[in-house]
Amino acid sequence: MKHRIRYAAVVTICVAAVSAHAAGVVGNSFPAGFPPIEDASLQAPIIGFGGAGPVTRTPVIFLHGNNDTPFPTACNPYGAVQAFAQYFADHGYATSELWALGYQGDQCDLGADPTRRSRIAHTNAANVPDLRRFVRAVLAFTGAGQSHKEGRYKQTVQAGLDWMVKNVETEEKVIQPFFQWKHNGRPAGNGWNRSTNNAQFGIDYFNRTGTAKSNMFDNRPTETQYFYTDNDGAGAELNGGSSYKVTFAAGQEPPVNGFWSLTLYNDKHLFHPNDLKRYSLGTKNKNLKRNADGSLTLYAGAKSPGVDKEPNWLPAPNGHFSLYIRAYWGKEGILDGSWKPPVIRKVA
Image 1 (cartoon, helix red, strand yellow):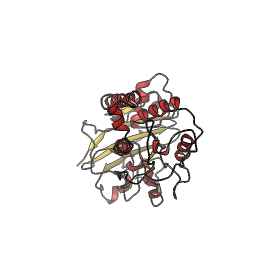
Image 2 (image 1 turned 90 degrees about the vertical axis):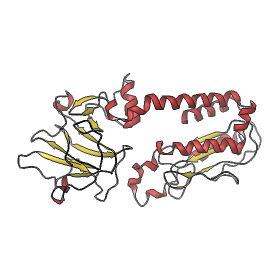
Image 3 (image 1 turned 30 degrees about the vertical axis):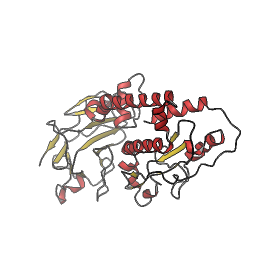
């Protein structure tokens, strides 16, 4: 969708003649009569801007980056999208042709709880439905949708629509499966997969696509190696309704010069909010309890494994979750693949 909108914007920039007439002022609200749209993630009306009046070009819709807003707010001093739109207004566009969607609210919800930044409401994916409704509303309000049916702007709009259809098909059939860890990297043993080329993508577009879809960030392979899975050792999907244990045999924790951690993510690959505010366990945790033979057992599940085992417990959501081992500055066993992550065993 973003690519489609950018395409339309680029086309209109190229064909628009710069005019000298007085420019309108881009505001920070929607015009009267524009239908209210609720942000499905924040359960609050979307914010943004647009203008009333006739349109002679395909409307341009601006989207801000992550953790930003379409204009400065009480909780976010940036919002440079508004100034960007004003540049268009200063060079011939009517404010009725310039629209912006704030798909993450005014950012004020982050003040009370900064961990919200990693929750679903502050991701692009969560707000795709809002964007679709917004695009339809702008086309209907400005009449651009009807104009397309009548043949006006047909080439630009049709190119955008074709692009959108192809993007949707590719997302569903090609990209979406990369969100599952079994489609990322290569097998690492015991039901886990591991990263391959990491940030040194080169021409490994398979790995690059998988990272962009499911992980978003990788270090270089000699700096960090990642091990991940959605399933237990028997191949069943991890679910918080059950309880699991991961036992590192004595001397078999991830061999690193730096540090290692086991992190739990929800079905959106985001941290699961919990009363312990605990999202990972590993080298940094000094109160982990070891077994009599020196091995280390970590637990994962929605229910506590018991007071005596809670220091070693990662709270999980009631539904699907995944586990992720990070090994920073790995030793030879990490780099050459000879170290294997332990089996995840379902215990209840």
